[in-house]
Length: 261
Image 1: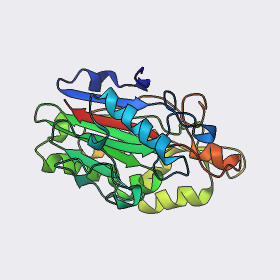
Image 2: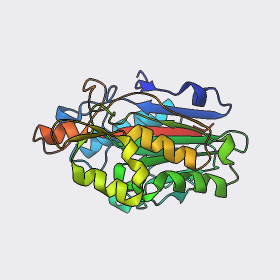
Image 3: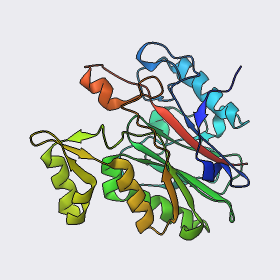
Image 4: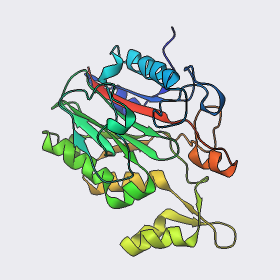
């Protein structure tokens, strides 16, 4: 079996003892709207197909499926420390949070997304990695900063952390209304800088830039978005917004993952 394809961040890839992958929607066994590499166990996809896809994702890291440690994501600012894999539990039995950090070698930290921003973090010097799911709610609530704080609690230093924002909805695709902007500017008027005017009262929100700014505020110097727009590239990525606009009942989820080798 050929390993499923994945994108990478050059700077993360250069770190000794760290492996990572931003998986696309290719290389799996799911069918229909989930074709083909759907990792969303909470979707309505065939559980057996999702389980096989998880097995393939883990195999890319030369690991067993039980090593793939993901949360029941709730769009929060909760980030957990994992000392051992949670195993292949049912999705509803996984810890409810939006990030996982570890110092344990062989444990794969993963974040699922389909327009939201997955963030992979690594301090190779001390041996700490993490994965964070940053949708707009979580990003505004502080999940990115919480991810960095969890890394620091395990011995990392912000200035040593390398962070990469994976495939997410891009600034040219994320059209929102004025009430969306109001939620951000109510928290900080400076957040208006992340919105560009569209037609009539429509605006475009730059989610990757917002996440990168939150990383900078947390002291992370090396940070980048890999530049992949999930909404714009249907061949490569799942997209919640694209599915909603088409009236589709469900959609697949992409996996971004990182591990200490």
